[in-house]
Length: 80
Image 1 (cartoon, rainbow, N blue to C red):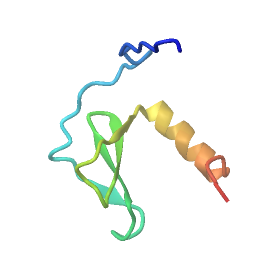
Image 2: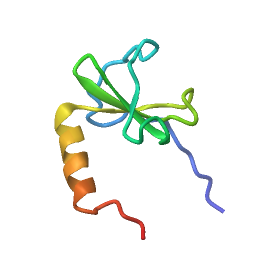
Image 3: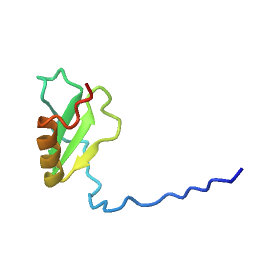
């Protein structure tokens, strides 16, 4: 059996800064009842699981966020 060797590679194209999200103003689109929260921090959009606020957040540039929202509205991410 061949041995598998993995090495950690830096993320290609990762041009986002390390953001301090400790003072972020997290907002929910479900009047506070939803699990997804977003915050606008230093020109970026952060998204997290509101039920697990200590878990990692996704960071979007404004262009990435716009593409995500447009595609979500068109049902690209519907799993049903």
